[in-house]
Length: 455
Image 1: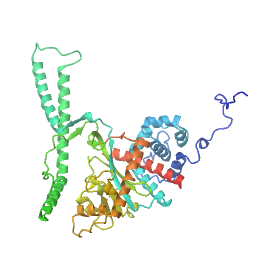
Image 2 (image 1 turned 30 degrees about the vertical axis):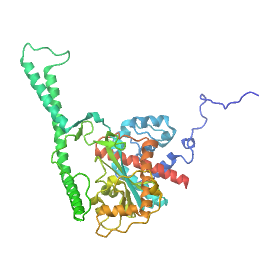
Image 3 (image 1 turned 180 degrees about the vertical axis):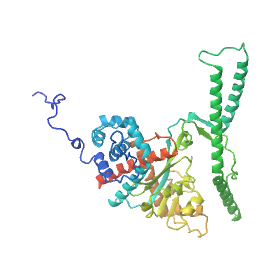
């Protein structure tokens, strides 16, 4: 018997218009996103109220397309535009219209209020669906590449050296201009052009040094407070007769450090340690507070601080008020430990912080497997660091803290690996924060869809 094949006919026109909804499975993510976005209030949306010019694309359609593309790993506005032609799900969401990349990019840049309100609306939806309860959250930060190369950066010391070098070259060129028999330059080069080029570079380097000096002045009060706190802690240990190890804290300097960096492409980004400190990247520090039960992101923000030392309060404060009211426990790693930050969070007694005082390995040693009795409760006036140590040495505290590793770290893994978001496309802290809101909104809808399917 001869082999039989399904007939494939690309030539005959369809007898009836196709329904794009039938081209996607009933439980497809695109259907879910469209359903959710259709209920989101258009708070703060930027539209042309006068109705002049060409007809506008509906904001809900643009929001649905943007969120779906970010959830599925398409971030560039040009790639999103292309997807409205080539991707069935995107073509369905755009209703077979094709907004150009400029329209998409402008919508993304100018609708921060809409994205923030949509983020809150999705959390409220999750509560209505009984998915989100939020009693315990895990907080962490991850480094994401800025849209700038670290090779476009200059250090404070190098900028000073470069200014001296360029000023010497300008003087040499001026001297050369006064010599009638001087050696001619290469074809296409002129003395006025080369002098202007160097003077412009000198001005840029001076601006860079001025910015670094202003940053040093702005961070000086916080560094002074941290220095005084460390000194007081060490002195208190000496008064109690305890051993004080490590180097003495050094007073902060009013001027920038020689290695402080300024990036000419994105001046608000910073050189940061990444990959467990194995290398450096031009990056931003993206923060997230994640519900330990649902793994939904309930709070998010972006900072250009290279470490998390002073970020705990600000990240917890980024949780919308309606959600934050039920939070009772906060889990954080050792990078967030700051006596001032944690004391302020626990001041009114509604929050309890579980944080590792020292860096610990994920590997469990043999003695970690053995059962130990809980240590004696520290006195009420014990320093905050001593209270944190006690919490993680109790059986209940260890069980609670283990949830941090299996909550927030997988979320960052999904965003970077499954969604493929590893670098911001926008530049500047405010625009980067807007894009991080879009990323976390897309993650939450993707996660909520998965929870609905599982339920």
